Length: 412
Image 1: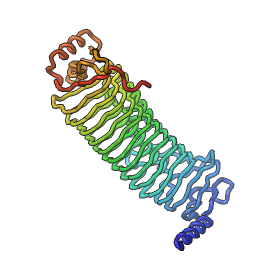
Image 2: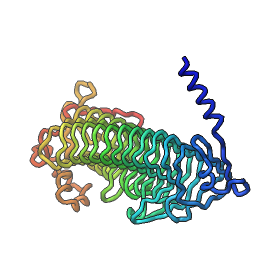
Image 3: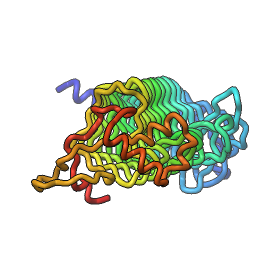
Image 4: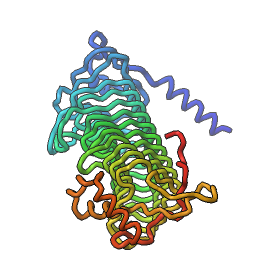
């Protein structure tokens, strides 16, 4: 009881001692750096409407940095703008523009180093190199931000939200565009990414590297160089995302490389060059996903074992499945295939004839990509039929023994 009373009084004392420092051209404190010098832990720096031409603002105190509507920090392309090296801070409602670009230094609108318990929200970051660059930090919330860049090449652009060596991060309801990668995780664990829109980025909408035990869901990845790349990671859950309009000679809705023990379900892959491209992927469950009007729905390269594809819809893709190895222990069952021409005499909703999703022409295109120009020709129909009758080049045990007669997802 005495401990609770003491903590209560300490809280009241801290609250009373915290102060708000106003910054504006007509205020006593006219610059952000001046305000930081006099601020103490727990204080709030309030930027009133105006343009603050400052950069390399280093903050090592647990404060809140809040902007009035119309408060803009202009870095004048001179380098990084805000650098936080403290725990328990908040950044809210700021507009930050014109981050410097460098081929050797990762300049960011907001850089966070070795922080715990922080929130960055309701900010607009424009013309950035890196938007948010977060290193060796945990328990951060990044929400309701708009981050955009104007660079035209990978070398001259950075990532919107870049987290390196972090854990327990929440990244949600952000919009990211015109960047290299919208969101980039490297050595990040136990984190969640949801309800973001990542579009028109040069490389990936979302990029995971060496990041385990993470979840991303209800995001939109549209018209990026490729939608999402998940590499060298395990125990990833990916559900209820939309991967669409990621077109190009090497564009994917989702690229998986050296991934283990993942759950991929309830996603929409629509109008991508390749819906999912997998290489070195093992023990992944693909359930109730929709593949609609992609070039390839799925391309599987080598070393993909013990994967299960159940209750997915494959609709009107140019090629449903590409498979470049005869070794196969992956399971396809109870999927809907728009190209299936079998019958259901007992009306149980399951085709009476197994479906072979790998066409000989898909095998030919793997060996000779130029053959793709023959896609709609009579020649292709003939060779696919011959392979269907007597499989020689495609895995003879790769089939859906229980193809569904009706699609799983009626909303598409």
